[in-house]
Image 1: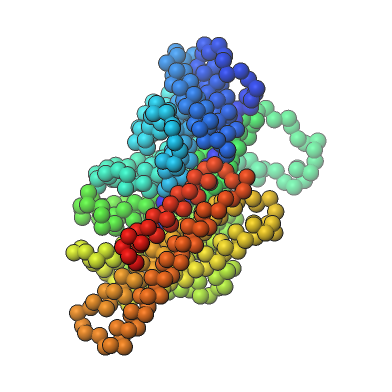
Image 2 (image 1 turned 60 degrees about the horizontal axis):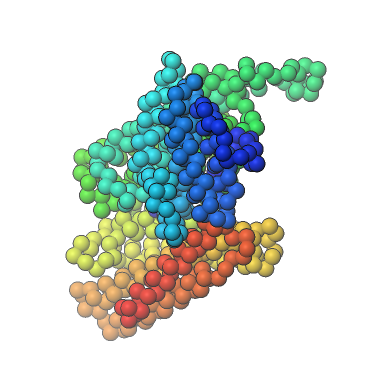
Length: 541
C-alpha cells in the first residue's frame, strides 16, 4: 500500500504582527514563545516559493524555542506551549520535507543547506517520538490534572503512524511493534473519549433549545467566554474558535492538527481514519515477507490484538453522533473496507469479485479518483504480498499463474482509468476551462506520472509472468510460444512508451504559480522515469 498522503497545516497563528521586529528583549518564556511564533509566521510567508528562506526561519524559531525552555517558567502552561509548538513544528517539517506526499524526501534535491540547520530542523522521527513521549509523561498529571490537549494526542498518534508507514527506514522488531501498538491504542482511546465526550456535551446543550428559542433574540444572553471555555480533562464548557485558530491548508491523507482547532465531528472521523490506517499498516507489516524481525508467535499476537481494536473502532463508528457523516465519508469507508479485504488477502475469488464489481459496474470515468487510487494501491499490495516476481531462488506465490495474470490485468484496468481521469484534469487546467486551478497543475502532473510509472511497473510484472510461462517445465506448443512472445513484445513497448511519456510530461514547467515543494516532487518523479529508462537501455531492452 502506498505511504500515507499527509495533509499539511500552516503554522500556528496567534495573531502576532508580521511587522514586529526580529530583535526583541526576551525575558520570560512567554516572550520566547511569541518570538518563536513570529518566526514561524515568517517561514510560512515563504513556504510556497523559497524553501531555503522557509527553513532558515524555521531553524531560528526552533533555536528560540530551545532557548526559551532554559528559562525558569513563571507558569507551567508556558513551558507546555513552547514544548508543544516545538514538537508540532518538527513533525510538520518531517511530513512536509522528509516524507512529502507520504514517501518523498525532497530535501535530497535542495543544495547547499547548512549541516547545523539540517540537524536541528530534521532530528529524525525517533527523536520526535521521544519528545512526544517525554511531554506525555511530564504533563499528563500536573497539579492533579492533565494539561494535554486533544490535538496533542492527535499529533502524537500521527507521529507513530508515520513511523510505521516508513518502517523500511528503521529496524522494527516484533517486541518494538507490540509496545508501539499498545501505546497507539491507549492514546487513541483517550482521544476518542475526549472527542465523543465533548460532542455529546455540545449536543446536549443545544438540545435544550427549541426553534422558537433560537428565533427570539430577546432570550439570548451574552456569553462569558471564560466560563464557557472547554476543559479537555473534565469535558466541561465549550472550546471556542478564537482569533488564534490555525489555518488549514489541505493536501492529501493524515493530518497535523493545530493547537486551537475545535473538536468537531470531522475531527472525530479523522481520528478514526488515522486509527484504521494504523491497523492496516501494522497488519501489512506482519504479512510482509521481509519482516524477519517478527516471529510467528508475535505475528499471531499482533494480528489478534489488531482484530480486537478493529472491532472496537467499528462499535465507535456506530455512535449516533456519526449518523449523518459516516456513510458520506469516502475515506472512512475505504479505510474500513481495506482492513476487511487485507484479512482476506489469500482469497483470490473474493478480491477479484470485489474489485471487478467496482470498476465494471460503473463507468470508470465517473468513479472518484480516490476510489481508483484505492484500488491501485490495494491490488499492488496484494500482488506484492502474494506473488514473488524476482526470478530468484526465493520465488513463491500463494496464487496460481492464471490468478496472478488476472489480478495484474485488473490492476491495469484501474491504472488506465486513473491515467485517463488525470489526463482530462490536466488538459482542462492547461486549456483554462478550470478556473483558478493553476496551482493544481503540478500536483496533477505528479500524480499522472506516478500512475504511468506504476503502469510500467505492472507491465514489467506481466512480462515476467509471460517469461515464466514460456520457461515452464511443461513443453508448450509452438503456437503457444509464439503467442507468449508476441504478448511480451507488446508489453515491453508499452513499458517504454509509458516511461518516456511520464518523463516528458514531468519535464514540462507548470507555470509561475507552481509551489516550490510541488516543483521538487515533480523533479523527483521525472528522475524516477528517467532512471527506469536508463536501466532498460543499459540492459539492452
